[in-house]
Length: 67
Image (tube, rainbow, N blue to C red; front, side, top):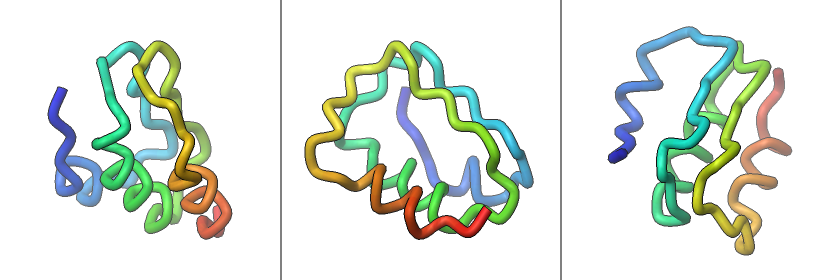
């Protein structure tokens, strides 16, 4: 699955389900940007993907989110 920030930026979804989408670390930039900028996100499901999360991008994005 190829993620595009615009697919998420135009939606006011409080839940984003990306469960088992075959995501890899190179797509964390887009996921992180969505998390940082969302004002309504309450739940993000990333189970079943190929993410190592070693670089801290996801943790930093969650820390910057105000919701």
